[in-house]
Image 1: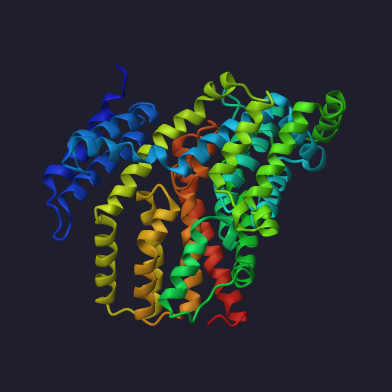
Image 2: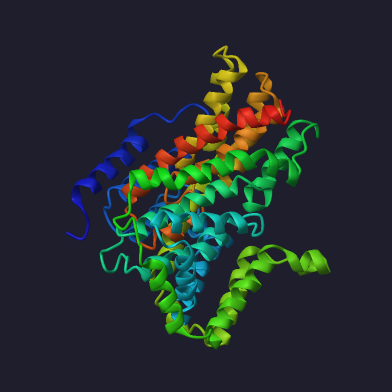
Length: 485
């Protein structure tokens, strides 16, 4: 059969139960509840691998349009179902993957990989920490965690894995590639939480905290960076060790790697013109993502992160570094654009139809009636705020929909405003660890094929607990020292 029958039946039954059997809760739009049924059924089908994820996404888009859960008008229903294909985030992810093809084609990726190995290549874990260090150094600059983790670090990680002949195509991903891919990804949520400018939702958090406290709490770039530095560094130090313990690489020690890398660098010779162009494009994008031209010449020179990615890809096409055939053959990019669009569309309409607002209002009411002190209330609110992200395909959407409500509840129950703001801000980045659709970086790395969905979700759940314990545990001490509460 073209699909797996048992997982297919399970996903269909779950969807039908939610749609027809479970009563629509009071205050919930029936269309929102029916869309929830489609969303959960789709997630279950993805987990069960009923079909390739892109094929399931197309079916989900079709069902949203056919059932009319977003609109009674058929023309509007299909427009809604296809709406996320115009999302800048979707195209930033796809174009980042396309651009990474240039690193492979020109050989620049191998050159960078060999350089990393020549310095840190004695042990696999040393290579992992070199990727973490690179992620941390770049983190304050691009305002997009997808551009950083998926567009800059991931191509280098892939090149390092390929230099050790560890690829999904060869069936050798467990040799070193799976481990490095996981470290590549899980460094991204941590560094995203360390700087306001490291990811798009952070400035929104700053604004919401400012409004909720009547401008009493104003998180500056420096205040945020100092507050999050120690917890973030501790998480970055421990994360590669945890992943090493859960999913150890088969190749742990590479005593000849440094010499091997240096020999290969010699064989590659001087940097060729296509490599120089590729390097120039990366530097150009980094400068634009860091908003340097706008700082020097004014706001008129500000470019959106996705526009910057398209500019980089256009330059590579015009210079012949990449051809159109190279781009249309980049299967993982097009696959990601399709399935991530479907999930973002459904998650967005769950919010637009009021289901997320209803849920957060109910949480607020229930916790207010439990008679808990602010410590217990904040603990419960933080856990719910973090793990409800299984139902979101965008951190920005999650923060927009839920931060203000959860923050207001905590304040009404007596939580110190600065402390609670920092806790929720940390949780809002830690939640990126959970799923392969949790944030834009996730589908880029997941679709490279180094991990299975099961492995991704398991390590995501584990790292969410580890990061939360370290971040909040060390943060409570550090923030007390800083006098934040």
